[in-house]
Image 1 (cartoon, one colour):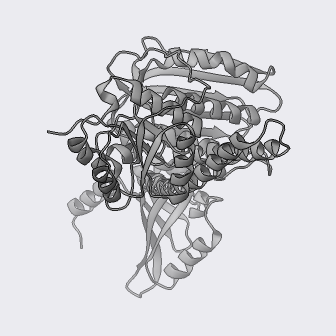
Image 2 (cartoon, rainbow, N blue to C red):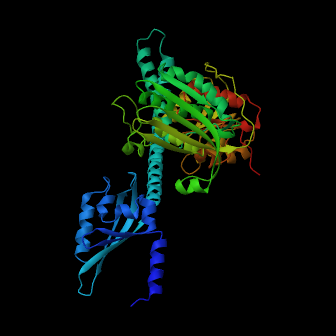
Image 3 (cartoon, rainbow, N blue to C red):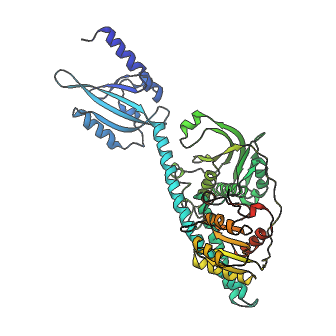
Length: 517
C-alpha cells in the first residue's frame, strides 16, 4: 500500500502537470480535473463535477470519434486520438487525448482517467507550413508555365507588329492585326501576374519611403473604389525605409483596394495604415515562416462583408476566386502574395464574416537614401540604326521575328541559337560587333557566360540581356545590370529598338560586360 507521502507526491504531480488530467466514474461523470484543465477550458472544478466529457464537444469534431472512444474504453482498451474540443467561451482547441479504463481486483471498470496535451499551436503552425509549401509549389508551376507562354507571346506579338508595319494605312486587315496585338499584350499582363505570384518577375528594387509612395497612390484610389467608399490613409510617424519595386507595390495596393471595393457593395471605409514594428521571438513562435527583426507594416482594412474561414486558407492560390464567373481572374491576391514574398516580406489576412478584412504586410526595414523619381518617359518612336548586332536566342520563331524586324530597322544582324554557336559566329565574323543581344537562360551555355567569354575577344562589344525568368534566376547566372541592359520578356519590338539605342549610345560601364579578373 502506498504511503501517505507517496500519495501526496502523486497528488502534487497531477496538480502541477501541464497536461490535462480528468478522472470520471464508470458512467463517465467527471469526479476530478486538475488545474491545467481549468486553465485551458475556462471551467472550474465545481462547474464540471458530475458532468460528462460531452461538455467539451465541438461542432468541428465528428460524433463518430466519441463513439469510437467509448467503444474502445468500455472494451477495456486504451483510446488514443486527436480531439477538437470546445472551451467555456466557445473557442475550440485541439488535444492529443489518451483515455485509460481503471480496473478493480475483479477486473471490473470502476473509473476512466484521461490525459490530454494541448497541440492547438502546433497544428496551426503545421497548417501554415503546409499552406506555404502548397503556395510555393503552385508558384513554381505558375512561373514555369508563364515563362514558356511568354516565348509564345513573343512570337505572336512580334509577327503581329511586323505584319502591321507592312500593311497600308487603309488596309482592312489593320484592325484585325491590331486586335491580335492587343490580345497578346493582355495575355502578357496575365503572365506577368503569374510571374509575380511565382516570384519570377524581374524587380526594379529601390529604397522607398512607403508613406510618400502611398500618398501618391491614395490620390488615384478614389476613382478606383468609388464615391460611396471612404478612404483613410494613416501614415506612421518617422517611418523606416523598405527596399521594393515601386511599380509592384502600387500593383499590390491596387489589387487590395479592388478586392476591398468588391467586398463593400453598399459602401464603407477603406483604411491604409503604415507603422514601424519589431517582430520578436514571441511573434516568430506563433508565425512559423517569419524571421524576427525590424519591419515596416502596411495594413489595408475594409469594413466589408468579410471572408468565410474556409476561403481564407486559399485566397492566395492562383485562379482561386469567390467572385462570379467572369468577374475576376483569381490572380489578384496571388500576385500580391508573390510580390510581398519576392520583396522579402510576409503577408497575413484577418477576417470575420460581417466585420471586414485586414491584410497585414510586413516588409523588412532597410537603411539607405530614398530613390529619386525619374520623370523621363520612354519615347514612342521606333529608332533605326546601322550597327552590327549578334542576336542569340534558342527559340527559332522568336529569333527569326526579331531578326526580320532589326534588319528592317537598318541593322546588320548575325544570329545564333545558343552560346557555342554564337562564339563560332563571332570568331568567323571579322568586322566589329557593336552589340550582342542574348537570352540569359539557354542550353549548355547561358547568356552571362557567353558574354564573359566574348568580352575577352571583343572588349568593345556591348551586351543586352533578355529573359522571361526571375531576377534571382537571372542574377544567379552572372553579373547582369538589370536596370540598364536587360529586357523582360515579353517585350514589343519597339521596346527592343529603343533599348538597343539606349545601350549602344550610353558610355556607362554598366551597359557593357567587363571581363572578370
